[in-house]
Image 1 (cartoon, rainbow, N blue to C red):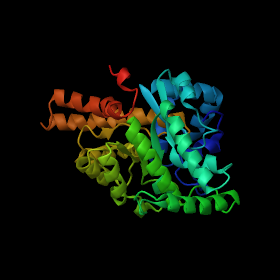
Image 2 (cartoon, rainbow, N blue to C red):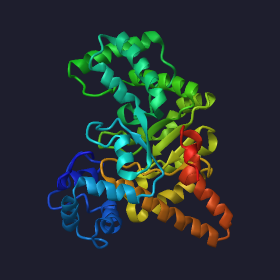
Image 3 (cartoon, rainbow, N blue to C red):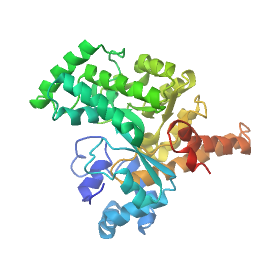
Length: 365
């Protein structure tokens, strides 16, 4: 966050739920909490597995700026790809990430948030659609990709075909009236989202940008069974025909499904960033599942961190540790040579991302 968090604020970000932990318990009492106390505590000059109260007190003593600087700086990340659509006024912008970490940071723009921003002042549905197209196109020179949370808002089980101008206008009029009257607080119309997806898809095709898709895990309003990415095959196939990379993010509990899609579609990439952080001691399981079938050139490192520098730091530390441990198993079992292991590591850690996100190739060692 760009401003200080109190103890309850820190605890809240360690949960995907919008609800507090039961009385007498804490969101630290879960795998991600153990990971914070195990690996982040020493960076703040505390012993490994320092008690929660000591950790939070030390965090407050150092101040959020110093905590951010230490944890982001120690992550060892070459580039941050920052989705600026979630609580944009409260989290660090890419320039803040660069200042605190000394590493490159670039923006990924969230389609649904652009539409909501335009809706606050749009005159009618036609004006909304026109402005959204302009805003997305104007953003292209300064971003490295688009992101959609379609699964989060309406699930993947929707009509995925291109939407006609008439249908888009009707949907935009209907949803805009509800939004501006306060009947809904967010973009939750599948047809308006579909317009945004196809508009972004055309821009991604023309400017060689990827599209990120939120998959699976989310807050307590997610229809999890309908967030399986295999439900979104029609749209992904269309992007495949346009040579638009589609990156599936987070993927828990659909890690194996994502790995299968990366195997069968030329344009599909995926990560397990959230999963490694939030499973903590069991993070190797997620990486193991991801590596069961995925082409090595399709699996991406990610932290999926939000709000806490601890999650950025842990994303890097835990992934390195558990990925290297799995590679050591393959090496010991005769499944890979040392050269193979180094090559796989380079692909997953950097080269795969550099292949699809503009501007990263220049950072290659």
